[in-house]
Amino acid sequence: MIKKYAIANQKGGVGKTTTCVNLAASLVATKKRVLLIDLDPQGNATMGSGIDKNDLEISIYEVLVGACKAEDALVTSPSGLYSVLPANGDLTAAEVEMLSMDNKERRLREALEPLIDRFDYFVIDCPPSLNMLTVNALTACDGVIIPMQCEYYALEGLSALVNTINQIQSSLNPRLSIEGILRTMYDPRNSLTNDVSAQLNEYFGDALYRTCVPRNVRLAEAPSFGQPALVYDRQSKGAIAYLALAGEILRRNETARADAAQV
Figure (cartoon, rainbow, N blue to C red):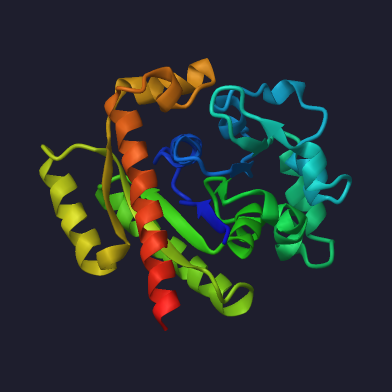
């Protein structure tokens, strides 16, 4: 059964796009069929996948406004070997246009419906704001993966995102839940990092991934080459961390399926 994840946090610079690209590549490395959906007008996930956002004839914009089917906009990442619904600056206009459309919060979910049998995972890169694009992502997915740095202001922003998730769950998508909290740019030598990490563990419990993504130069360099870290430097700490995250996600899903089968 397909799993659909939105990678979301309204705070910028926490590793959302890095997580999308590298999680997609890591899941492909485990023989899963993956679709990465770029919902950020900056198009960083598109570029980080080795696809030139300035050379797109069709993008997620056309899909959301109903100008084409999602299948027609699919591109394969030449390095990560996953499929991509790419984005560029055109996507900025989609949010305005969708406001006057029927089912504006469900445009993405309806567009992705015909692709469900073709993939094992949808991974959606959200913009760094709680706008209509993010609402579409949260309405289309089953779970939210929240990347965050272990710092004070990150905790403040997290509460606003949790409130938004609860609102979407009650009004648009009853299946929606927090899939996991991912600690990024992690430095265990920092006392604040350890304090915030302890608070996250206390509040979220099992939802906090054991995997932590460290600060890593190779991980930061990889996007400029249009490659996931797994392709750019498979032995780097960043690549190894995202492989571990993919393994943790797969194990959670297997456990959940086994538990459901026993009921």
